[in-house]
Amino acid sequence: MDRSDHLSFLNRKEGHLLSTIVQKFGGTSVGSTERIKRMAEKIIQEKSKGHDVVAVVSAMGKTTDALVKLVSEITSEPSKREMDMLLSTGEQVTISLLTMALQQQGVEAISFTGWQAGVRTDSILGNAHIQAIETGRIKSELNVGRVVVVAGFQGITEEGDISTLGRGGSDITAAALASALKADRCDIYTDVDGVYTSDPRFVKKASKITSLSYVDMQNLAVMGAGVLHPRAIKHAKKFGIPLYIKSSFENVGGTLIHGKIKQNGPIPVFGVTFEKDIHRVEMFECEDVEGFREAFMSELSSRHIQGDVYIQRCRNSLSLLIKKQDLHEVLSILEKEKDKWKYSRIEERSNLSKVSVIGGDMKGRSEIKVGVCRMLLESGVRVKLIGESSISVTAVIEKSHVQSAVECLHTGFGLDYKDTLKASV
Ligand code: ASP
Ligand code: MG
Image 1: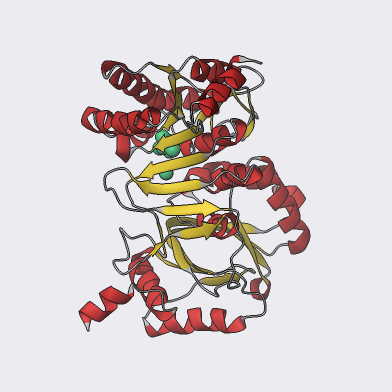
Image 2: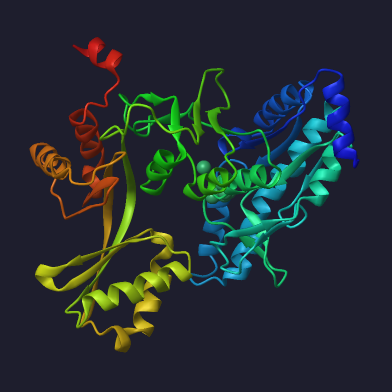
């Protein structure tokens, strides 16, 4: 019997339920030393119930943005290796301060960077995927009763370089660690108190969704709901780890994300998501637009670049919607492959936003797309591009219209918080 078997045996004998909990604290939750001390209390609460606790943290407040800004003062083309070296420092500050806050309260704790925690990633720097986590060191610290505090968002490549997982990547670390440790729960502490029908900081009438399947949450996250990184859900789903999204500051119920199948069948539309800052790159007069799309998408995916690709047959063009951070790389791929992919010219547009309505099963429900177009038109929002899939309808619009577009779709699809509606009548 190794020590962990022994411990759980002892705990069972004494009637305790020993389990492993992963707690993740986002940037706002650890934005000051005062807040770090408050989060330490949350860890101590779980620890005192007899659980093994692993805490995963983000960089303090807007630290990562500030680091990115420093880079822009030096170069517009930083090397990916040095970028990851720099960005990984943000989380390293938080792990040590949080560990000190725990020790100050008499709780035994130890901090680990990504590589110390055994987080192995592929070599796509800046957007690396976790391939495995060697949990030996974490487990032996848990076995001697310590809280383990791990830096989110980072790992190490096979070549021994520090890698980062892409913005918002601490969620991924938490869910992947919870899976690797077969944890009983992964709690994501954040600055909103759960998942809403739309971002509650933006849409006042958004209402909280208390329970969601992995698939529905995945669809919201992929289409822009910033509350949880989409790749975190994949890791949790693999081993059925429940994810609980809750507020760091208020003691109210959050949103539970789990593998249970819904009883009542899919609801047509349950969320409106948006991405405020989207760039569009359009390639005109393509010789083989289908072949181009296929080759382009596979090139993007080999670099882990997320984007939507649309063919516009009327002008024989291929359009790509991407985040600003990927623009530079995408343009250099297009330039390199120009002769192979055979298009005549490129046009770039910024100041665009993407608004999507998300549902469980939209296959064959053309009235949803028609509804989106009509509602936007009635609100004076011009649609530049519209696309649909089995779970979403997405419209590309001017950035200046995003607030009215999201609000009109939220109201139009009956998602407004009923009490708010009543109160405003
Ligand atoms: N600090 C990183 C970011 O700001 C990772 C995270 O917060 O999840 O994107
Ligand atoms: Mg986040």
